[in-house]
Amino acid sequence: MEYDEPTVLATDGARRPKQATGFLLRVVEGPDAGKCLSLDTSRPARALIGKSKACDLVLADPLVSRRHCAVEATARGLHVVDLGSSNGTRLGQKTSLVDAYVSPGERLTLGNTSLVVEEAAPETVQPAEVTQSAAFGRIIGGSLAMRKLYGLCARLATSNVPVVIEGETGTGKELLAEALHEEGPRAAGPFVVFDCTAVPPTLAESTLFGHERGAFTSAVTSRKGVFEQAHGGTLLIDEIGDLDASLQPKLLRALERGEVQRVGGQGWLRSDARVLAATRRDLEAEVQAGRFREDLYYRLAVARLELPPLRERDGDVALLFGHFWRDLDTEGRPPPADLVARLEAYHWPGNVRELRNAIAHRIALGDLAVLPRSDAPSGRPPQPAASSGDFVKSVLSEDLPLARAREQIVAEFERLYVERVLARFNGNITRAAEASGVARRHFYSIKNRSRQ
Image (cartoon, rainbow, N blue to C red; front, side):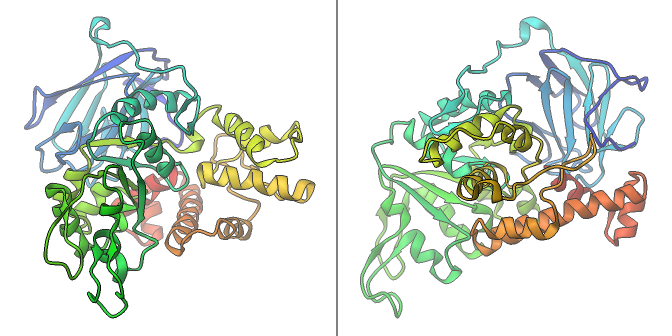
């Protein structure tokens, strides 16, 4: 059975509410029998289960994928999402699940490993670390999904460890990185951004590490790289998943030694820069595919923050709407009374960036503005725009780099395609994959991406 909407499932097939504040995942069968993973509703991000050393619960089972599934404790139950694993995640005796809520007493099977979901004893559950603040630095959001992040963000701001910030395009990864910088002890130092998608591959090395005069034809003067520019401050490497493979070992060396060598230079230069990395990609999948170095990933992912998409941030559309309207409307006009409700009904595939652009569009054009709307039936994801042509135009209007614009358009096409072919086969993924001409595992991967 496939679940189009998250459901609290009991082993007898009944739906029932669950209000547990904590869960214990205990391995009862497999090579890692006896291992446990404790979760509670204050956890600021999903916990990962798989073979990768970066997972929260590392399993040695060869049939388990590197990044097999994600789990999160919620008031509705333990939320389990398969991450496109090779052999699927099974709930009890049912077929593989993609996205479901499960209750204590139920069993999950990953490869040859079985885990029992238990309710954590009340005395073992730490008090929920959820702040009451509706912002962290310049990051705005009063939803539970965001407030659960702020405590961890505050602790990471005061440290010097590398952090990987994950999230869809437009969720605010760069703004969060800047907030970590501004709320920490390096706030008086520089904040420098290196965007891996915006710098041509031929210039990436000299932009990262600098170059000496005469190092190449156009190097008429010496130039500092971003590591040197960020000395005493913070360096954000944006879209780290797009970094050229030839530069990854050089970046790893710079991170491990804290020093860089300019192109054409002979000596090493000390760099005291805290490094943050942001990505819209699944870096674990990139490692598995051989496109990203495993040792570089582990060096960067000392800590990890996952920004939720706007569609999962209950109430934040209205909060952000008020902030953006006040910021963008220089004439101080009140917003239309029905506008917030219209915007809250939309799916926001472009997340916070798309919302801000939509509000700017409405302020500039008034009643002539064409705003996104949802005509989707209840229970199905809203459509991103009145037509595919409108969506393409909305992406083009953001003036994004080619790679990012293409990714948004392809992601929306995949979402619509998966939705259509699944409807044809009543949700049967095996038949839908066959009709699509792709392997079942690949179809799972596309389906998971389209739901994120």
